[in-house]
Image (cartoon, rainbow, N blue to C red; front, side, top):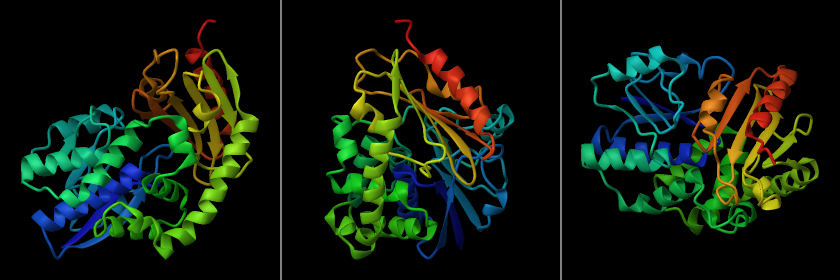
Length: 320
C-alpha cells in the first residue's frame, strides 16, 4: 500500500500532524505501508495540485479540503477549511468516516490524536510532548513574546528549523525522526538538525532586526513591508516583542510563488481583539483562524497586496 500524506508545509503543526498520522496509520491500518510526504502551501487560486494525490490512499492534514475521490483521509482545524461552498457540501456528504474537521481545536496534531484515540483506539504516549508543543505553538499559548522569539527550548528551535527550511526532503526527514524519537534534545542535538539550524537561527536574528527597523505602529496596528528583503517568512511573534501595546499585526512579503499578506493578533494585547481575522482574509481570497490569517496573491501582485493591506489596516485600527 502506498500512502501519500499532504501536510501544511513549513509549519510545526503540519509536520507534527504528518508524524502523528503516520504512527496511527502504521499501527491501525497498514504497518507495511510505503509512505510519501508532500508539503502544501497556500497559493493564489487553487490550494494545491491535485496530481499530488498519487497514492493508493491519500491523506491531507492541517490543510484545506479537496473534493477529490482520491482523497481518503482528511483532518483540519482551520475556520477557512473550504475553498468554496461546494467543497463544504462535498465534505458534509462524505460517509467514509475518515474525514474530520474541528475548528475549535488549537492544533491539528492534537485533533488527530483525539480522533485516533476515540474512534480507532489508538494512543501512543511517546507523542505526548509533541502534541503538547503543537498545542502551544499553533494555539499561541506562549508565556510571553520573548519565549517564542528567543527560542530557548528545543521544541521552539525545531519550530524555527521547520519554518525556515527550504528543502522539503529535509523536512520529511524531520517527520520521520518524530515518528521514532521523542521531542527532546535527542532530535535537536542531532548533527543533521544542528547543521541546518545554525544558519536558520542567524537568519532569524537578522529578520528580527529588519522587522524592528521597518515596523510602524499606529492605533493598535503594527505594519511592515518585507518586499525586496528576500524574507519570505518570519517568526510571527517578533512584532509583539517590540510592540507589546499592539493588538494587530499586518505584513506584506513576497516569494517566488506568491505575494502574502499576513494578519495576526497579539495574545497579550492590552486592548482585546474585536475582529475575526479569518473572515477579513476570506474577503480577499484567504482565510485562517479568528486570531490569525493570511491572503495569498500571485507573485507579481505586490501593488494589489499593498492596496489590500491598507484596507485591512484601516478596518483594524482603533479610533484613538
